[in-house]
Image (cartoon, rainbow, N blue to C red; front, side, top):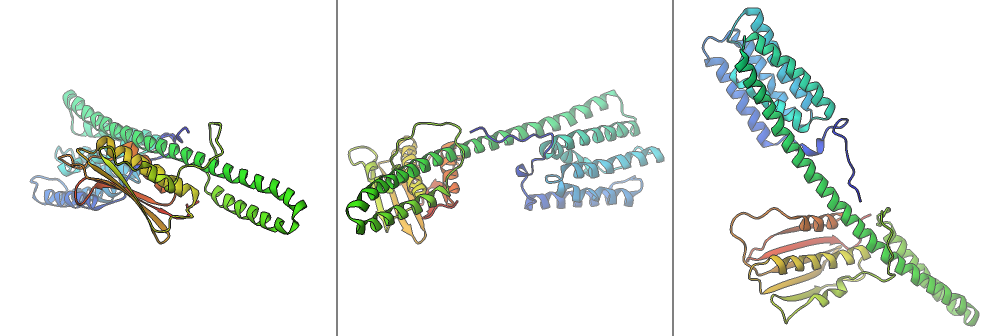
Length: 379
């Protein structure tokens, strides 16, 4: 499936911007303290109280820089423009605080999180303010060139991080779409299997009704049960498949087939343990548990260093089923690596069914993949 595309011209990207956190408040606190201290101790500062108060106006702008980047940039650079106007009015070369270099952060935020329209409007406003500031300070060509290069580098840096974030989100959407297609195919196979069974029961019912009418009720009850189960599983079915493929009318592999993954004649050995009542499970959950176990086993065999054993454990816990795949391999030195797209795809599959998946080093060494899925798949 083709990922949904979104035009940066019309829409901002609030999904890329994390909410205000502790680091943001720390940044604001450091800036406010620096502005106050500089406003008090800096010698020869003209209109000291007014300049300090105007500098503190950047505090809300720094907090809004992600979710409202244009407003933040207009506030910050508007203060800079006002100071430039005052500088021209009083003919002073020393008006403003060095701490107001925080305006560069607002410019970065505008290019990083703003929509296309916001970036165009904000860039025009910043250009006017910069030109006014250059005029007020009687800057030469060298200052003009250096300042312009600095601003362009900040915008380029923001564009790089924006592109990387957009690429990451597109890859995540592609993984999610692929998992949706896989789930839809599995569900389609299951529904086709049930419908085939219903058709067979109906054909048998027409024969039984003529020979033994008293058994027709049993046939109708079987048809009703099969139809009810089919409708329940169709509610979780992804509606659209772009590719029409020939489908074999047979159910997908599930938890009952996990024993086929057990191996005692290879290294690492594979042990499978099934605990608790694992039937009946919703067909999407049953198939997903097998797929997650199979892919986790493949990853362990390929990547676990010096592993001699891989354990696959599935157990029922109330209304959920817990799958644990662990190995006894040696952990690689250094920090835990970022999850690859294989693990991301497994996590997406679990989330689509209303569950969760985690992966990381085990408490006794090796690597552990753990998935928790509801017995009944969420629609």
